[in-house]
Length: 261
Image (cartoon, rainbow, N blue to C red; front, side, top):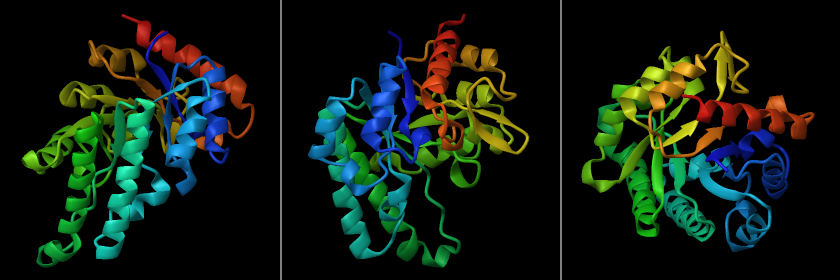
């Protein structure tokens, strides 16, 4: 089987273990886990995941817990770092290769950078150190606003950490479109270690891949000899009904996409 993956974020609000099972039943060898609650992180959930019939290849740092990571309050920083290490421990147990995070928002006023931004940078550094110690890559996703809006901006943001954090770039095709960037050129310039693939048209974002206006042949060509997972990450509203059939369709799309030359 190929390196084809599907994000459980697209199966919200289903139970995360049930979502993993659905992904496996659709023929995907891998899934990207988006934890939705604290009980989705830890040994008890890892045991469930190991029995779901699909390998967790990557984990997206849970959106529901972003306030733990991107927070300057000393108590929340401590709680967030403890949570991050627990997340990495589970990732290592499951053989996860990548944990995904987003760029933080720069401080609105340089006078307050030390108080409001530096602790967040330290949180990211702490997570990076935990990942590196466990052999997990920490991937920084592009975003349509802020530091990751363009290829140069994303690479500069990663470089700003210097030797303090080991980060690798990743590309979300919809986020590139939202920033008025060509996703294929974004990929060619950043050489991502991880992908989130979804489609885009007009103001409609995170469509199932193949249902929008992205030139997927161009994207595939830009990837060259990419070695990572091909992770589909559409919006969950498209999978609230008829999920098994739509997952099977997604599986057919990603195999055809990845194998084209």
